[in-house]
Image (cartoon, rainbow, N blue to C red; front, side):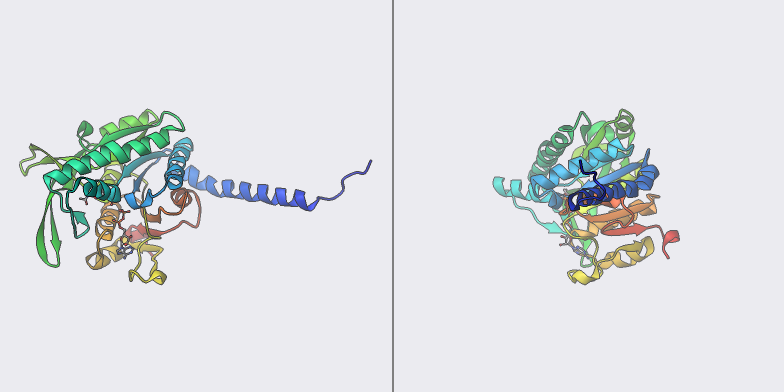
Length: 313
Ligand SMILES: Nc1ncnc2c1ncn2[C@@H]1O[C@H](COP(=O)(O)OP(=O)(O)O)[C@@H](O)[C@H]1O
Ligand SMILES: CC(=O)N[C@@H](CCC(=O)OP(=O)(O)O)C(=O)O
C-alpha cells in the first residue's frame, strides 16, 4: 500500500477553489455584521431587468440579504416595459427632463404594467425561494403621497401631466411587512393630494428613482442601491473613462444641473436620500449579475457611491 505523502495537482486545484470560496465568504462577514438588522432600499430599474438570468440573480441576491439578517425593500421601475405596452396599445408618450409626460391614457398603462406585470414578475421570482415578497403600490396603506411635479427643461417650465413629486411617505405598512420577515416590493403609483393636503381622487405616475429615494429616507435606510444599465455616474458622459467611484453630496449638488435624461431623477433621488440621513447611495450596473450583492457584502464595492459631505475626503 502506498501512502499519500503529497497533494496531486487535482487536490491542489480543489483546495485552492475551496480556499477562494472561503475567502469570499469571510470577506463578507464584517459587511453582513454591519448591515444585519438594517434596512436597505434597492431600486431595480427597468433597464436592469433585461433577461431571465439577471432577474433570477436579482431575486437570489434579495433573498440572500434577507437570510443574513438585512431588511431588503425593493422599489422597482419598468420604463422600457411601459414603453413596449404603450406602443402595443398605440398610446404615444415622450420624456421631458427624464420624466414621462403622462396623459390619463398613459397613466392607465403605467399603473397596469408596474403593478400588474413588472411587480408581479419580481414577486414570483423572489417567492420561488420561499414566502417572502409582498407587493405594494404607493396607493396601498397610504404609502406614498404626491403632488403634480413641475419640471424645468432648458429654463422653461414644462407640463408633465399626471406625474407625481413625492410629498409624504407613510412607511407603516412596509415596516409591518419587514417585522413579519417579508420583502416589500413597491410599485410607484401614488395618490394625488392638493395644496390643502386633501386627496384629489387622482393617482400619479412617480419616477421609481424618486420614490426609492423618498422611501429610503422615510425608513431611515442604511443604504439606497440603484441598479441601472450603466456602470455608474460618469463625469463626462458618454466618456467611459470618466466613471466616478465616489462623490460627496456637495459635489453631486454642483453637478446636478449638468446631468441629462434618466440621470436627473436618479441622482436627485440619491442626493435627497443622503441629505435625509441615508448613509450611502449607490448606482450599480444591473446588467452584471449579482452586482447589488457585491456592492453590499464586499470591501471593494462597485459603481458610484454618494457619501455625506462630512465623510468626503
Ligand atoms: N452622466 C451620466 N452617467 C451615466 N449615465 C448617464 C449620464 N447621463 C445620462 N446617462 C444615461 O442615463 C441612463 C440611465 O438612466 P435610466 O435610463 O433612466 O435608467 P433606469 O431605467 O435604470 O432608471 C444611462 O443608460 C445613460 O444613457
Ligand atoms: C414619471 C416617470 O417617468 N415614471 C416612470 C416610472 C417607471 C420608472 O421610473 O422606471 P425605470 O426605473 O425603469 O426608469 C415611467 O413612466 O417610465
